[in-house]
Length: 125
Image (cartoon, rainbow, N blue to C red; front, side, top):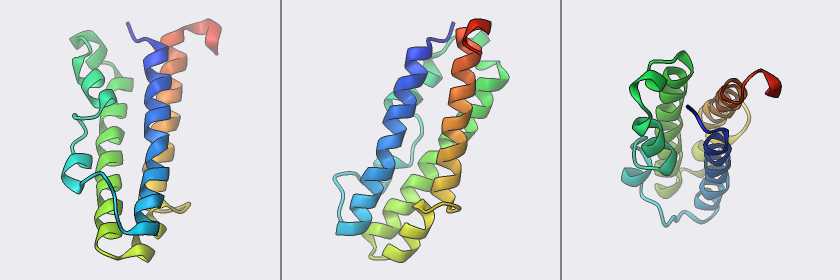
């Protein structure tokens, strides 16, 4: 069974990335490396997602979130790589509305929110 609180935590944790990336764009520096950001199975949510029992991982919601979560990490790593390489305008465009990171981030949050409602049951809708 999916704990809706775990999904809330995932939304909050991934929302922080926009601020981290903006800071990297503004300063050209980050405490994070591209190599640490790119894997989608190393963050707390990725570990949790992959630890779910097989019946949960067979669900459509899990599969869709898994794909978008991997895309989120790839997009975040690309933004960070651009920012650290001095390509601020390229990085800023990716986090702006319509940019690659912004799009995948919005889709991921929307999908996790929908999954949370499904996990909470009919009374949450």
